Length: 262
Image (cartoon, rainbow, N blue to C red; front, side, top):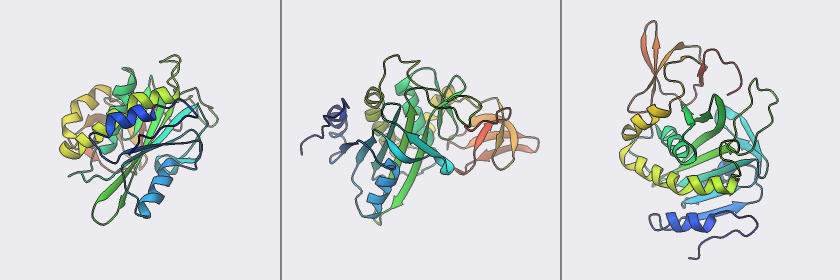
């Protein structure tokens, strides 16, 4: 098989393929000028029986999706949007989004922090998000890991505070540069998670946990002080009635003083 290569932009598709394919035969990299959503496309393929390992990158998305149904529209060059589809079957799925976020943060910048369960922040502003979906294909599970990162400053309509962007922290960085930083380490991180779960990553997540020690409010009305995450990746919240473990991916958490759309 010849390595994939895209000539329209200077995407590091070939370098990523060369780094990943020895450990993951059959892995491919695809760069698309435009699509509705990279996650939606890989889920479509999975339902049609296409479950090969693939990194799908879109220069722009017209119907990108975030967690809890939020929209993520990206324009060429302003954002990095990609999805990683892998046929994996971890012993425990708990904490996968935290492992993904940790890998991305460590690949990008020392100042990138993590907001449970799936956001990247920098100095109190949202830098990016993660959307994980799974498809059952009979003999094995197929996971689609979607990532959206702001490269250039974004529009702020509807938000009380502007989202963060990488460019002010890494001058001159492009979406292609950011992909080159994060892609191969992310594949390795997911492979490692499949074998060992989240527990070995707990201390590293702790070091970047933006919520720890803050009073937080969940979308279902619970309020308390965030104590960090346990070995499974569940958020620990200290409430007047005791410590509560929050597991649900359908629960949104934010610092109690913040009301902006995060």
